[in-house]
Amino acid sequence: MSDTPNDGKALTTTVDGTSFARVPIRTRVVMPGDDLDAIIQEYAAGEVRDGDILFVTEKIVAITQGRSFLLSEIEPRPLARFLSRFVVRTPYGIGLGMPETMEMALRECGTIRILFAAGVSAVTKLFGRRGDFYRIAGDKARAIDGPTSGTIPPYNEAVVLGPERPREVAAHIRSSLNVAADVAVVDINDIGGNILGSTLSRDGERRLVAILGDNPLGQGHQSTPLGIVRPV
Image (cartoon, rainbow, N blue to C red):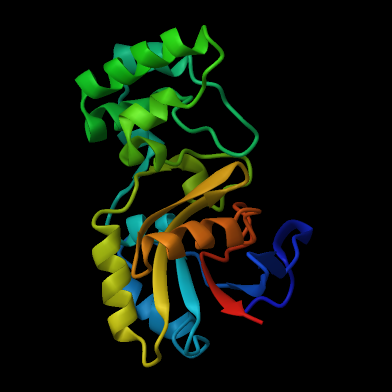
């Protein structure tokens, strides 16, 4: 386990009157072709206790599913180049603000859906409303990760899609643990988070988003794609 917070963030937080430890688990860099089960067994299985929640970043799930692509492998169509110019880039992630990530969104979600999302978003932004693009484009578009300056190589030159069947992945991981713990596949960054699939109830998922709201794993060179939430 990592014994220090990422980016100076606290290792404990309080939600609904209960304090929780958030324990990052450091791993080697996960590569395409790696087996997720082996990663979990090597780094996490021996650390999880009864009552814990093991959370797994969607990125390593997707990578082990073969859903990462080098930028050199992606040829954006003109539409992708055009649409990417209207996406607001933030310090926390490029999102669909580059032609290669927008191209993958068109492939993942379908051209009609992306165009509809872009059209609605353009109109509602005139009235001060934001977020409609991703609400309409859906989780597949929201989960696409592009490279940033803090991304660990070789993913500083790659696009990673969202994972397939995250709820099934979470259930499978829980079945591989020898303790009574829950599992969640999460997409957490410095501006928000989503639970893509878990063995938790809906209320449990909402609470987990609040517990992880300050992104305790970080998203740069920390190399902590796994973590444990534990009541304290």
